[in-house]
Image 1 (tube, rainbow, N blue to C red):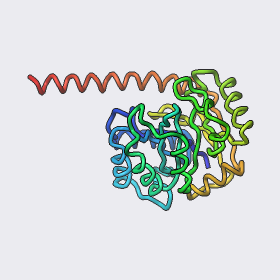
Image 2: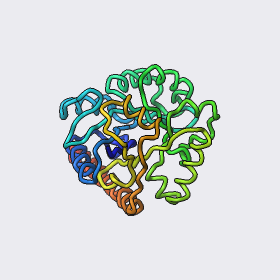
Image 3: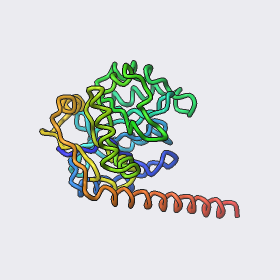
Length: 262
């Protein structure tokens, strides 16, 4: 089973969820060869709960995942911590939504939940806990103590960081860091739109039907990482497209505001 463990459903945190946009992303994910993905949308994205209510409307939920266009979509979210860093949580829809409700008072910058408090909450649920992009300049994790980092299940080898910092050097840095902590490394594209799918993914030895099975496979090392030879061009094209799409959204908003005021 080929799965991307770090993906988003929206162009940006400030944008609304668009079913048409996400369906296009899913079709491209399937065309790129993926069998599954973890939807790790930002926990403080605009109208977070709407994302899952829309998924409920669009796709059947089979146990621990949505089924769409032949893809398994495992629920999740990306959580900011007070110490500066991002944590990916992946599990059943019910677990993700319950944990998210407990974070309602921690969504603003400067008031994010402390790492240990987040782990206290997350460890009460059957969740896969991944430290996202541990060496990203803006949101690293390597500054946390070994005791804290030991509470995570794995660390994210992130396509965006590989593009920005160099594929070989970033992969070596993340794998060495994880190895020193006795943790596995998982692959995530961190995509916000369709072109980045397939840039990096995990190939599990056997299909997984639940988040518990997914976590077990990762912890037992029953998977391989795959990095596309086209990673750099995929991410570069994605970055350029995202910038263009954001400009188009701002232009549409400006035109709409101008028309309504005239």
